[in-house]
Length: 631
Image (cartoon, rainbow, N blue to C red):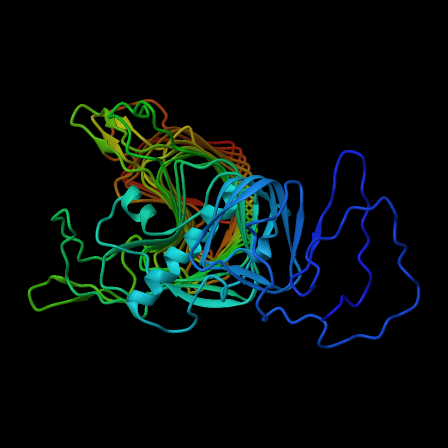
């Protein structure tokens, strides 16, 4: 008979009789006693043979009494039986196992270390610890490269573990060392369809991975997947770990999905899909190589045309993405499609969508592991449609996004696309390409650093115009405190109610380009300095039209023309002033480049200094007042 290495201590009160069981004792029932057995200070010799958890247990669970605690330090095979436990049974873990059967509880607890793929748990029971450590071996997870069938079972098994422990009180699911593939393929680009085939994270749950956690997408030819989803959850947290897509091993053969829709692009495979969820946190995750997005945030379903949520559905709200490293996803690293309240901070967002698109001899796209549009680091893209009368069918909406303290490098098309979003703050980031827009409003871009990774990159910030039925969709931008270096154009500006202040623009071919349509805007306090062989301060686009725009307190020092206004307002029917330039300082490195106004209308330049004179050609209503030329 084996005995424990140290005495067991039993304390019995008037209200509770505690029965302590050990699988390796000949006497399985220990009678209650009011005596407290004190533990000796003397170190007892360790007996390597004292406990062998692989040996069969010498008892069953069919005859235990209510309010008992059972220590499992042996192998208890239930033989496929369903064991109905008496009231308030506590099952403790000391290295053993319970397998091949079902335990039905009527109150009580069970140690998480005893849970495994072959043990069913039901009834009224809770875990002894709300943190559950996931052991891949106990849940029959096959690691390393494997078949579709086995990786499908991997996915089913991990979901079974999540569902079980969540149902009995766990709120932290810990994964340590694991490197496994999961079959999450979905032959339909649909949120609920993909959710059903993903690793599913419930509400009030922390899916906690370590640096040694690698969850990989089993390579597939299907056009869509989601490795991990939160579907209409509250307060879910996903942290740590490495999530790897199948971009480089995916089969891009042309395909129609099961709904008959052409999905040749294969652009719907995401590694984390947040769907109609509230208060979701993604923290410290490494995310790579999705065929679509690394992270996508969406609503539960599309909205009604007026932008309202369909009854009984919801969008994603209060989403925090922080401390993540996201790289080499094929479409976008992060895409926000429908959400209210998203913060992305302290992330590295690199190398999205690299690789050139190939075409066959008929000009048709050949999809491959190369990037597919839009290919942005972050794409804020609410899908919506503009009607002929200028109204919008807003089947998606994005409102209130903050992107701060992030680094963007190597992204193919661009770093951030403010495509269709309202209320966005972009601050204190590092960019090596650009921030662009399509039809968005109420944006602040401040205190960022832009350093072009190539002198051929056309701009750092581009705020373009989008007009339908005489309605401009780009307005209320504030661009301030940014440092921009090494681009062809520093800032390109259109729209209305725009403010551009206190930026430093260095070594750009053109510091500021006035766009095709700009009105009711203020440009002030910026510095444009360039030593390039050819550089300009302020240029308009050809045939640009602007109105009620003020440029003041600017410092411009370039090698060519500090002010180069060609064909500005040339088609205007107005006779009033449309552009005022006030209290600016212009410098050129060559007297051969005067301040230039050619084929332009309705411009006032006043109270400014320059080291070169004005040249006005074929222009109308040009007012030059109180300016001085310095030597």
